[in-house]
Every structure is written in structure tokens, then in C-alpha cells.
Length: 258
Image 1: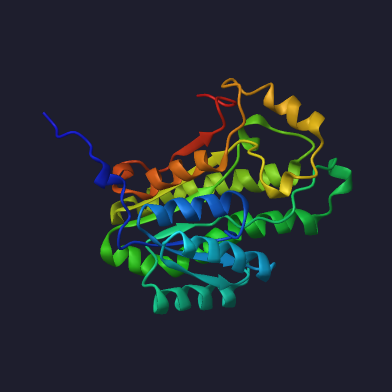
Image 2 (image 1 turned 90 degrees about the horizontal axis):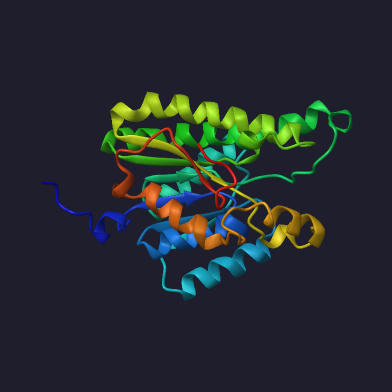
């Protein structure tokens, strides 16, 4: 008979986590949840220094450990510098969560150009690729690592008119699945967390009609909150999920099943 699972399996003490795009929204929630579980968290932002500093001050006031770092995570040189600085100040990165995202307008395909499509792939395929290359040597050496990509229910639901974002998320999902198989022999898991529409700061100007139309579709009958995502990210980063890899976990109250 196997021993029961205990809370320590979910602790992240002595682990270093990087969450990109973590000054607000779901990135902030994930970073705070990891800090509360004992990880030293590297917050990352590219723009909005004042907001990022406010968020990190709030994090430190809660008694959590970490650092704040500015870098564009689609620029190879800045990614290399970012990871080197985090390693020097907090320690080698054990947990990687590429979360940074650009604006996501819904437009008919005729109104997109390839430059916009490329920007989606830069954030959702290029950035995870660049970041993973930097953290892999340490993860492989210690035979333990967590890479968690933030995907989306839009791929499974085929949301329109949203082709650029949906296509890039599909690429991100395929990349993650391939990496999960490639890195499994090294004790490194690669999973995905797919949030539904969970209102945060950037949704402040969305119409109440659009919000309510979506909420009525949620089988659980309530909005998701950032803490729902935070709890899932801690699970995937922890030893409790050590035999879970290549999975796309949807946190959306049942909007997608199967």
C-alpha cells in the first residue's frame, strides 16, 4: 500500500522560478502563489516599470523571496542576460513559466498582416524556445526541472475572429508536447496551463455584454479568479506532479472537456 500524499509534496522551498510578464494579471497571481509555496520568484516585465515595482513591493511586503528584472523575452541577447542575472542573484532557474503576451485584438483575417502573425509566434513559440535553451543546462545537470507554458482554451474552441492568436497557441501546444517527450528522460516535465477568460486588469474596458455572454457559458456558473490559476501552477511546479508531463490542463470551469 502506498503512502498517502502529504502537503510537503506541494512545497517549493529552495527552488527558483522565473515567471515572465508577471507584473499584473494572471502572471502576478502565479508568481505570488509560487512565492507563497516557498520558491524564490524572479518577476519579469518589459514595459511599465512603475507598475512592476509596485507589484514587486507588494510581493516583498508579503514576506516572499525573489527579484524584479526588466527584459524583452523575445530578444535572444536580453533573454541570455536575464537568465544570467537571475542565476547570479537568486540561483539557477528550476521552474520556468513563459507567460508574457502582447495585445490580442480580435480581427477578421483580412485585417491582420503577417507582421502581426509573427508577433504572436514570437511570444508563444520563440520566447519559450529562447528561455528553455538558457535554463536547460542546469535542469539537465540536476535531473529536475519544470517548464510550464501558458496556453489557452481558444485553440480547442477554435475561437474566431482570432486566427493569429489561435494559430500561435497551436504552435506552442505542439512545441510543448514534443519537448515533454524530449526532456522526460532528464527528469524535466513540460506541461501547459490553459486558462479560460478570467477577468484581470487588461479586461477593464471589455463590454459587460461580452463578459456576461461568456460567463453564462461556464458550466460551473461563476467566473474564474486568478487564484484558480495560481493553485494549478503550484501543483504543476511541485513534486506532486513529478509523473505528469505533456499535459494541457484547462482552468475554465468546464468550458472544454475531454
